[in-house]
Length: 290
Length: 274
Image 1 (cartoon, rainbow over the protein chains, first blue to last red):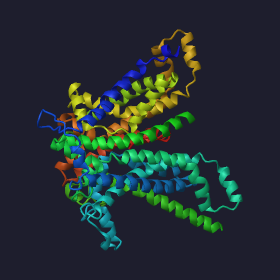
Image 2: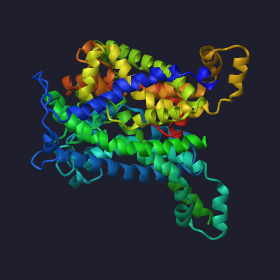
Image 3: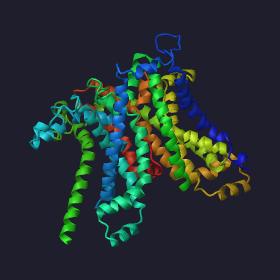
Image 4: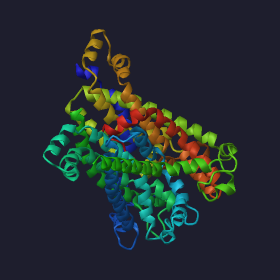
């Protein structure tokens, strides 16, 4: 009955597209990462672990990119979750024009990352960018920086852009989570004499854990693929200060050294598959509760 | 005590006001500068323009060939989002209704794609085999593929809430699977289908990497690539770059304002990737 009424060919189109354009390339990639595949010669030779040795060698800058990607992912997850939670808590109190504030704070999340990069290129400009301009106006000229070319600041500036773009998004998810917490919990806690901090620590955060897990996992997946903003703002510079996996991958692509590039993606693929396992567990749990 | 509460409230209102301002300032900055003359906009400040230069928009549409890119983006995003809704809702229907072990596996296998990184190198080969390299069609297919996992996730969850009695009623009336799905089930999916359409449209409109890798000819570029190219060429003329940016984000903001409810519904049902 159900076989006839809910046929496999309904699944097959989406499945086939997904397999051909997403899954097969990944597995081909695993094989080709052991070769010297490049855009100049037609022969592909098997070279064993050579590409991986290059990636994990301390003389090259790949490790640097992998480290930066991790730093970026972890720090944006922490910052966005903390700020997003504070914003959600703030908006969850009956503030006037709440839906307007929510809409405005979420707005950066829907602007293309590339465009965000271009806008911040002007905002961070050392001479006329509005950040340095503002610091000078309020008499803090000693705080002005070459945000994108100073090796100490470039990566932090990029993290700041990403937090600006993503915090509102986290806020919206957490706000929905907050609204699902019954008010009676807080009332009885108040009767027991719990202060604001205790309520946050013993009621809000534990009950928000599922929502916080969702935001964390999704940010993990997103952070590891960061590219557009960095490509526009610094393109990996100054030096290798803001190099991440995807900027390295694109460089290998333009250089034509596909073997090393594929090996890089394969490393990412393995990490992401492990992550994917958690995504699946998380989401299939959610699906059951619907 | 009452005064303290009032003080706290004012403080909170001010705080949230400042945060909202911080969120929107960069966007306002671009809008203000898009109607200035080139020298006025060279410092990208909030000084108001002496006269509104709306012709900047005409200039970028002609010089930057933005009309072409705008049409391209519209076609790419609309078609990929539409096909995404169609194919994934069909898949979600079978996956959700026929819960065999195999279908359960397929469901997990597909949503695993949310985390899967695209291998841009080997995908070249696939694109060549399928004759999709450097074609608009190719970009539509790739856009569609990137949206499949999450869309299947949302729609499978939603179809679970559509009563099975409808299927039975359909069978009584002699429907086969195709009629059952298109005439009875699909109309019921409207809220989730709109969510999937909007999210796919926004995500693909904002996509930059796939066309950067797989579209060489500028006549096929979407808005993001065109803006990037334009920015490289006219870096000194921030008024034009700003006008260009406004045109790129205008459709996104319009859709956001109209479909906010659907976007938030989609995100909170498990949330989207960036």
